[in-house]
Length: 208
Image (cartoon, rainbow, N blue to C red; front, side, top):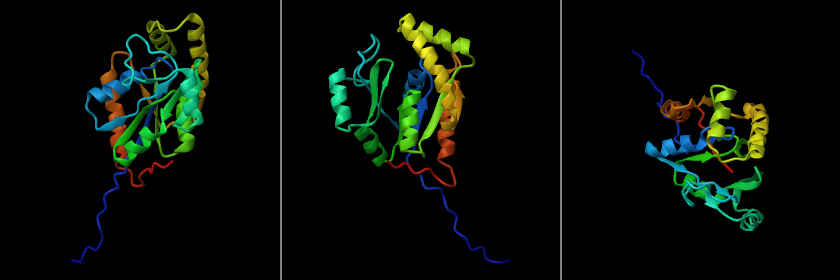
């Protein structure tokens, strides 16, 4: 029998940058919180915003809350990986937080609106972009209304924005249906995506 002469190689386990995105009210927060509750070994980026906290939000846990003047000073100082004016407020991702997490070797999960996901895609094409959607428009709109956190004018703006956001699907790597009352199923799909990405023959290389 001829001698077998080759080396078995395992894919290099480089940290991943995972973006959870989708239209307003689709359940991005619920998905990220569900991932945390499962104890997944990721670094979950805390987004900064210039809007005041909602009554159920905890500063430093759900978001970093800054007033508009402070936020603009931070933008000027280059402290954000990406930032944007969204629904009459600023949102941004602290650059140092993402950099430190990746250097520690942890996968990094970011919860971003579609505009933010598009910016990150431009900065880092190897980021994994996951678009959350509902089963249909009616279900999504009802979930948005059930939040009771927007005026009629704000609600109309979010609907108009979502129509444009669905036109950007081509920049995303995966689309996941986040069905109402089936969060566990959504989390299972996302976990499977991340596991599969770690077994790519040509691993993604996250660089900024």
